Each structure stands twice: as C-alpha cells, then as structure tokens.
Amino acid sequence: MKAFRLDELEAERAANEGAYLQFLREQNMSVGLYALDAGEQDPQKPHNQDEVYFVVSGRAAITVGLETTQVARGSVIYVPAGVAHKFHHITEDLRVLVVFSPPRADELSPGSLGDRSGRTRDVRPRAAPPGPSIECRT
Image (cartoon, rainbow, N blue to C red; front, side):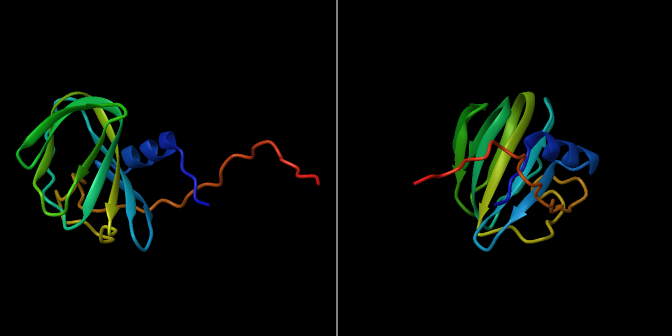
C-alpha cells in the first residue's frame, strides 16, 4: 500500500515553489497535486494523456474544449488527451488532485502543467498511521 496525506503533499509542493507535485507514478497512471491561487492564470497546455481532476478545495471555472463549468470542492472533471483546457476565474485558492493515464513523463516541459520550474518531484509515500489492530478468530 502507498498512503499519502494531503497536508504533507501541499507542504512539499509549496516548499519546491511549484504549482504541480507528482507524488505517485505507476505503470498505467500518475497522480499529482496541482495548485493555483486566487486570481492566478493557469498556464497549462493540452496533454498527451487522458486526465481526471478532483477538486480538493477552492473555486474556479474550467473550460475544456468549448465547454465551461464552475468547479468547487468535490468536483470531478474528465479531460480527454489532446483537448485544450484551463482553469480560470479562480476566486478561491484551488487545490486539485490530477490523475494521468498513461502516466506523465518524469520531466514536464515548462508550463505544461504549471510547474514554474518545469520539474515534477516524486515523493516517497509515508506509511499510514497505525490503526486499531483487528484480530480474526474462528
């Protein structure tokens, strides 16, 4: 199992001064945390992978192709590979989990997903905190 804490991922992303932090990469997908602050411009360009956004917090609009919708905490958006898309009218700091399939390359080109440095950073998962022990008896 790989387990992650959103607050730790956000701290790691902020410490690296990037808008995007890739924290999981597997054979068929990669996952990252994307952050745009209120009023900020989204610099991303179309990707070669399908992607799913899950809005963790914040408020904005997103345009995918010719369609626009409002997003907030709990919104899930699918973006097909190659389709132009951008968040805009960001009224509350936006934090979004991004799932790419197939996975993104290890290095991103500058501006491809808003990482100001053009890099992703893989973060080793931390063990999940110990929970109550469960004992099975027959």
